[in-house]
Image: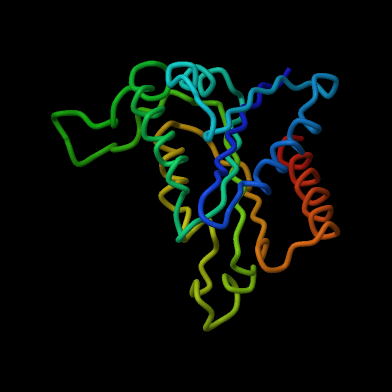
Length: 199
């Protein structure tokens, strides 16, 4: 069975209630069923967690899936806190050994001592920004994709652990332009994306 670890990084803050990321996590529970050949573990970062158990989930998983909204062009603060705590605790406990450098040549090989080789990760994000803001000339994100722009550091974090990327999935214009029909479309597209990525 393929082992899947889902991290729900949504949280309630200001006008955000975490609804969409909770819903995406429910879609995961439908898709990653035991009958389909999956074993699933889920962490909701807005609920209490044990740091050492979270380290064990990263080490256990074949695929780590992160769900989170992008707030002010970065991670929600509870997700950042979770990652700071869990990744720090994972030092020499199966996640990474060191930063990869050697005393004899301290300028080389930074970020090469991750211990999660052979494992993969996927990220989904939710945005108020429309998709066109990333693609149209003259628009806000200067034609840089989510992954090469805002999430560059997030992807390098996973590379530091030696996780290999699966294609990301981004949902845009979810605040001002959401409906039940559009939510159903996102579900269909997301589960199709999962089927292709994990084939």
